[in-house]
Amino acid sequence: MAKARRLLTLTTSARTTPDSELAAALDEFDIDRVANEMAPGYYVGPTENDHGAWLTLPWPGDLTLPYNHPSRLELLPLSLGPAMIRWGQKWLLHPGTGKPWRFTQGQKRFMHLWYAVDWEGRWLYRSGVKRGAKGTGKDPFAGALALCELCGPANLHDIDGKRAIGRKHRLSLVQIGANSQSQAAKVLWVANSMISDRMKLAYAVDAGLTRTALGDGSKIELLKASEKSTEGDPPTATFLNESHHMLKSNGGFKIAAVARRNIGKSPKNVAARLLELTNAHSSSAESVAGESYDAWQLQVAGLTRKKDILYDSREAPPGLNLWDHDEVMLGLKAAYSDAHWADLERLRDEAQDQRTALSDAVRFYFNGLATAEDAWIETRDFRKLSRPDWEMDATDKFAMFLDCSKSGDATTLSACRLSDGHVLSLGAWFPKHGEKVEKWLAPRDEVEARVREVLDTMNIVWFGIDPSPAKDDATETLYWMPMIDELHRDYRKKLPLWATPGAGGHAVLFDMRLSSPGGARRNDLFTRAAMQTALDIDENGTLTHDGNAILISHTLNARNRPNAWGTSIGKINRSSRLLVDYAVTMIGARMGRTIALNSSKIRSGGSGKVVVLS
Image: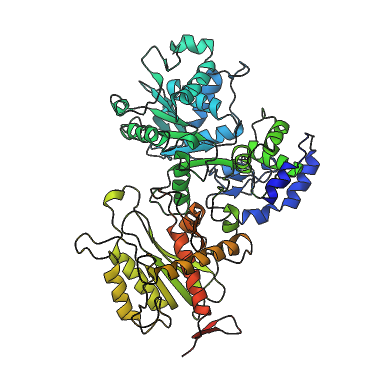
């Protein structure tokens, strides 16, 4: 609220900021500190012209060297990109000026990688995302690529030495989709305005509002969210425009599903692919762009079999002061880079306008992923607390928590070191890509084996398991209870503190169902732990974690959920595919740490190590 009030009183008169002042602002901003907050796959732009931007395009070589340094260019893969760039600049016009079309440097780099092939002639990237700030030219770029795919050398013909040779598809079919037909038609309208007169004559172009065709039968068409659209010839290329607007609620997910089915029919000699062009997606709504970002994050974290998603985003460094003219200009220069047509003074006024929501300013003008209004914690605050290289000592003591799910959500296991509260991510089980969610069951044997391994090798002083209400289809008992009871029998003497203490208690069961005896008390403990954990992340900065990519994703997905005891966490909605289970086990493990430290059986020694009292 204080930030919002400050924004309301801000004077937003435009003024020119000299480059010397921007350089001073950049030095004062401390890019090195901000770089420590990065999610996997990001790096800081290596040149002065990058203005500290966060980049994701995997341009090869030493990132401290300029993009066009000879040692980096030598590492570039074979690509049809150069030929596609030459074709586009020969035949196309700029939609605004009518002058010959010229790709920007950033667009050229993206095209080189997007059209890169291996020595067997396969694309290096199966799908892609081009994400940029509002006004960076995504529609003209999409139009140019659509025309290049329609008429240009987009089909690999041969590899000659160090050159990839392309030719036009015999029959090109380019599809453009968006969350509405009018939005898709906008891209086609832009593309039609880029067709030069000599291109019309050379290719016999018939430009229309819903399709643009060539004399040989090739065409660009608008993608329809209909099963019938999957019939017939598969496309040679598909573009989804503004995929951040493609939601479940407006049919966007259905259109994306149709697009992927169409692409999936592509024969080997065509090798069609899907490219999204988008602004930064909102973290408060599930979108096609958001799902693609999450899939890319899993890829760069090494949690997928292949690395075939090309994700290109140029973002202003987070943490900029939206009420400081120089820092806002620095952010705009970083986000807009070589979009030389952008009026940065005007954009600064729009970003600082009191009627522009802070989250919208971050998303649309800085190309950043803004924190949702009901988000549990601030996005940047959690990332900067990552300590992946911290070592464990053999004498360290831990509290541990397992959140169980049968099928719909993930089953996760986390531990928290008693001496300092450092969180470890010890296991996550959920449907992998290609597995049918409706038929997937959490692998109880694998989970139990991992739990036993941790209990046998680490000093666990408290361990809680929330069993979930799901039942075993065969026995009608709780799906996880046989495992939980076996762990109780095998480890009840080893665990100094029981999750459910007292007569008739249980060594590991921490049942949070309100219908269970003591369920209200356990929800109270968990809720208080959730609120304290949020404070330790956002305010105190004392919570550290191992930087696990799934933990970060689940934590940033978590939303505030008020209850009778305070504010706990939950998913965006019950049916959401944005999971939060690792955040649940992080909170549960930290709750167990508090229980252990408050117990008379455990004390913390002067060295910071925890001693279990006999």
